[in-house]
Length: 602
Ligand code: ATP
Ligand code: MG
Image (cartoon, rainbow, N blue to C red; front, top):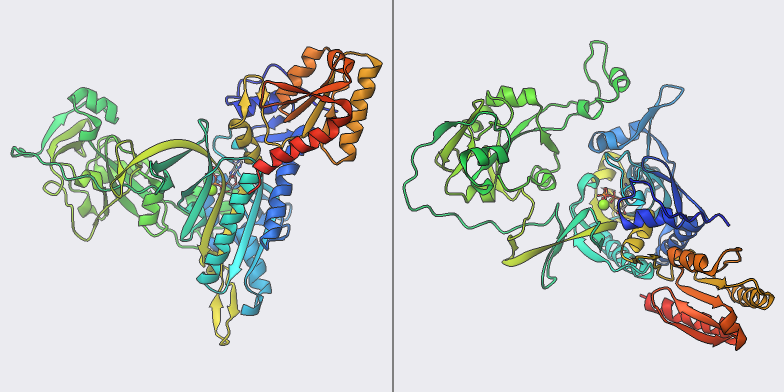
């Protein structure tokens, strides 16, 4: 068998799951964010796929398979060519047509429904596929946790109304609980923003662990759990300031473009600063900056962009110096419109100063709506940029020196929750996690754009309502390792381990070899997934590799045990082995497997 275990790992393998997947010979890197699964790794993948497939089928999912290469045109119809930006890989084929490497498949499946569904009698239905997705992630890392090519199970449901969607959403939610439980993962379900997907409701299934890239925000009593993008915070109480605050005063603050630099210079604290961000709506052009050719073909003879009208609108966003803007909350506030930091040139034109010296005073009147975070509105007084290069303004009072109300002013929760925040009066706690799956109520976002209609009971034309449900197959494997390993190697849950049992004969004695072969044959006959380590190497090497591979049950056939006609059975997760007579080895192992499986039974 090709099981190339190694001691050394490449420097880019920063976290345990990545290191162990290389060391145990489960996979090898081909290029940034792409991996080849070797036999053991592929066996793990297959086991996860089988669990996902079984549970999806039980819940009424129907398996299909959609193309990975999809026409860009279809993505233009929903506007997601822009939303995905450079994360979606695009290429031109030999006939000059533009294609994308599918990062997901809402467009294709919605088109299928548009073409095939005509009556309410065909609804609801739920189709899914297990296939490769490609996302040109800005920073692929952590092995298969964030790769560019990965296997996803993506399901899509179609409904006549939201009541039917809610039913299927609940079914999928419960299905996900069963899938992750069967995979041996301790998951937490959090409320999520629906992000690029759009729609109204979403939950993420997250595995709490130190190396997760997601932040789970929750209350101690478990009454609330959301991810950082979503987690709402209570507004802070309005600060009181007894003394009269003098008029705003500009101070010379040379070379202090960052919050830290200004604070050091003026001896203030970040929470006394008002960060002023000049933002703009995302434009079609930005998303194709890297693709000159595409732009040319989509401009008319005079070089104007054809097809869509895109214009840029500016916003001024204010958050406290110690807070971070939450893009998802901003997008939600603006009804789905994405905004991002404006270009340097833009900022200089609007503020009249170099980047780093923007302030809210006078900007609202320049056709830039002000979006003010609650925490800024609650400040009694602060320091902010003076809209003058190398100057900041002290004694700035919100409401006095810049407006807190009016047509162009919105006060809202637009920042990330931080330590000390509350929600519904309860203290918010933070922990890291890995997102392994997400479910979305999409509503009619895609069906409207792709014209997916049907006739209802009264013969009236209606738009389909949709849901979608994703699982990262590779991430399940990495998460299982991230939460199941020790200094010697992986500790797999029985359900997704590459093998359930490993037999390690120690010594070259014929009786030992024969006994190992016999137990192996019995286990294979009874359907157990069993690996026999018949290599001609020392016992120590076999034990080390068995621990590294993490196979849940090890049967050792050695000189000592064979003398009283027995073998040793040991769990990878426990230190103690048990002696069992040879003739009972197979049945005792089968029992052990059953009891391990029982624990993962939903
Ligand atoms: P993330 O926020 O981590 O980038 P996502 O929310 O964009 O992920 P979805 O669009 O919800 O991902 O995709 C469904 C599932 O696919 C995710 O829950 C995750 O398990 C998996 N997945 C997404 N991106 C990657 C990736 N780059 N590598 C491996 N798995 C991924
Ligand atoms: Mg997601």
